[in-house]
Length: 187
Image (cartoon, rainbow, N blue to C red; front, side, top):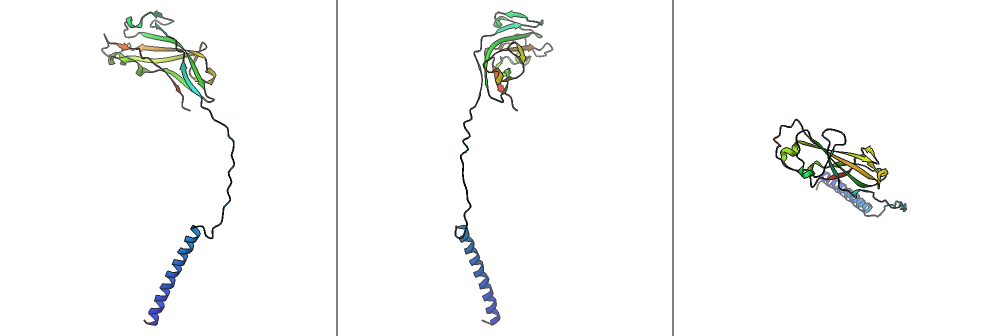
């Protein structure tokens, strides 16, 4: 080997040795040799317990159907299964229920579920289902923890469209599964 070639080979050899030594030192540091300890501590905060509230309808009493098409208190319908509706009729179903509403920031809405009214599609498409709530005799739009344990009055209204173009004559609605839904309001 010539001197020049020998010096080039030695230089590369030294560089390779240097890289290997550096890699070995890094491996030692990563494995814990030559590292230092960071202090740490944990303290229990004794934060206590968190309990969930409750939202529920209970003690639902059978309601009363009324024909309120002419306005006012309307006429009691003794047997809804024998009442024959026509376009423009407005019927209400009034019932009492107890509400359990426990939660510091709780707000909820009580509505009748339109999907719980089943039957022939043309007649079902001709109605609008709405709900009004009275708590202690006063209209209310939201149920809160202040209403916990109170009895509320729900008035479900079925409004038959007078301008309907559907051929809903001799159709049937099944109200046996008419349901109230109590939903917590999103914030």
